[in-house]
Image 1 (cartoon, rainbow, N blue to C red):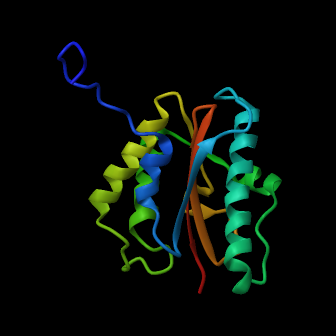
Image 2 (cartoon, helix red, strand yellow):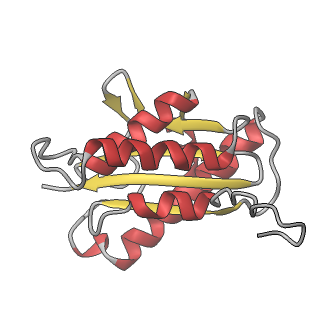
Length: 172
């Protein structure tokens, strides 16, 4: 209750809080935070800043784990930026939900209920707000890999100040 006796206002989850439940150990990774410098939505600087965050996540995961199993290095930040394909918010939420629920390598293997993943993904998209811009490395069924693994697909978004990234990585 507020001092005036009314109900507490509903707290909107932060992007980091909203995307965290979509992670799945050893397959689906997430990252969220503030961009080092604000980049206005709709500008090339925003795409570059988001690509740098995707690259940072992929590089960190490679150094922590994947280097033991992969002979390929992750794509450089410039190549990550070149892989960015714009998405609208509903398509970003749909792809994020798909990546959080079903294996890229084994489509019959699920990580969580599809509807639950779809709802969590909608919350993550909503947390950045309606002015956010969204990207993936998938376009019309084709993917520009960024990890050096057999399969990877990401969804990333930013409102110009904050960002979220979800990437699924599979290797056979």
